[in-house]
Length: 91
Image (cartoon, rainbow, N blue to C red; front, side):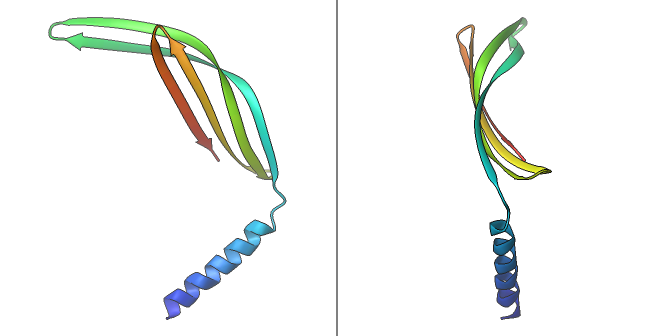
């Protein structure tokens, strides 16, 4: 009983402090530049390659206060027939 009361109290206090935050939402776009390098080894032969690509990035998030932000970004690279998708969560 004491544990459930403690959990309920913590949830109540935590939820009221989150609601008291003056959050600002944002959405944006950007550009990412990446270099991918790799080596493939089959038996005794190996092949090394690299590729570079620039991609658009979509970003959305919230500013909790002047020191804390949370954002999620997505970008997709397509270089030399290979496709790379990146999703990042920053806090």
